[in-house]
Length: 254
Image (cartoon, rainbow, N blue to C red; front, side, top):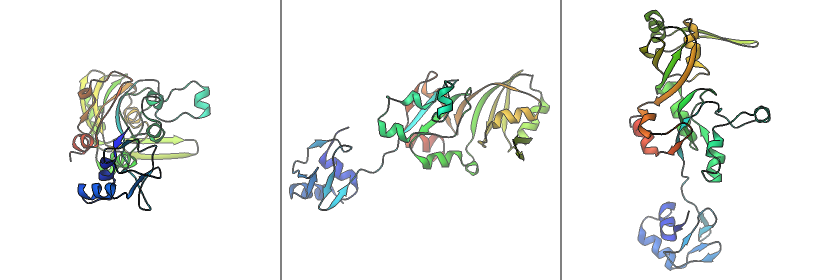
């Protein structure tokens, strides 16, 4: 990505005005890769050139990237380790490889995780602050899922889930017991519901239904906060770039 020298200097935050930028260039105070440049319209790639003002190296502010992916089934939300590669697992990050620049690709993380066979709304970003803000259980950001279950949902199960159910988790020598937070649940059919939860614990939705004697057959996340997957017309496996302003408005209501 090329940028004109005067635009680079203005975005660097080092100068108070456009006239200060022009003066610095015309007075020979700016070098690009060690060479004085006095042409304000000079174009260059800031990733490949070093710009200095006197003895000070100038850089553009860090620009984070935000993507919305319609996650397909059969991919995991982490980079593959040797064992997973050996087993033929696939990662969501493979979808982005060769489709974003290298530095962005290497910095990508998922905003929370969906299980391997859970589909739908998944944010992928380079911005660690946004990851924490959305996944922090104290933030009160709702995650909505379309859930298909094995047995017919009755009002007793629905009421228990809405009020919070007791969950017991045993993992080898460690065990944990907790009550899920209150949830929003709408019965859509005999064995399908829409569920909104604010927690992001591992396998949380599946454990909630197990606690009331049911079993999740399929799970599809439709939204986070007020940001709906259907608004972006993405087929499974497709992604699009979104702005921080979109996230702030739709997810956080800011």
